[in-house]
Image 1 (tube, each protein chain N blue to C red):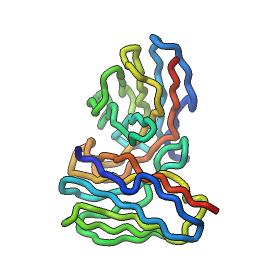
Image 2 (tube, rainbow over the protein chains, first blue to last red):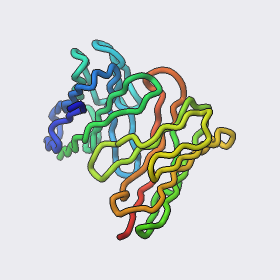
Image 3 (cartoon, rainbow over the protein chains, first blue to last red):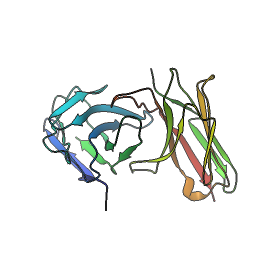
Image 4 (cartoon, rainbow over the protein chains, first blue to last red):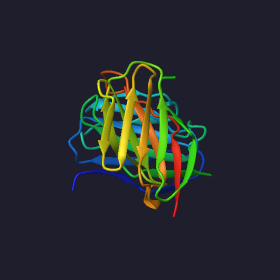
Length: 112
Length: 112
């Protein structure tokens, strides 16, 4: 069954701790994306990757880091430098520049 | 901003009525995509309309595109309670992996 798996669904962390969100895909798509969604603000792009071992910053990359060591995986680390990390994080993949995005079901991160 | 802007921000209708959502954008596009998001879930692609198309249908969905006005509309006919969700348009601006931008969406509530 093809798809995108984000884990965990809910994540709670104390302020000052780094946390890594997982995104795995078996769609064989080259491009992968991380978005952040806050209430009433739509989706904002954090990072994206077009191929293994390469990634680019999106609009709000500060305080985040990523890696792309395998085609199937694109983990996102929310570092302690991110001033307001509590949000809903969505991972997506894409098969070509004009094709639709495929989304996972998100991870809701709460930092207290 | 290059993002699509949806209007209205929120829409509440009775089951069986039609729902119309509008999207405006600012630059030339290759195509425009509409997505749906149920609460707490990832986005799901609904329909893609190319820049040389004026209208497209998919089941109860009808999408129009007016490139001269830089606008698109999504019509859901004979709405159902299960259509309750947020709907986003995403103009696709050209080549490259970072060519898709989301607005803040229209929150549709269908009252049974």
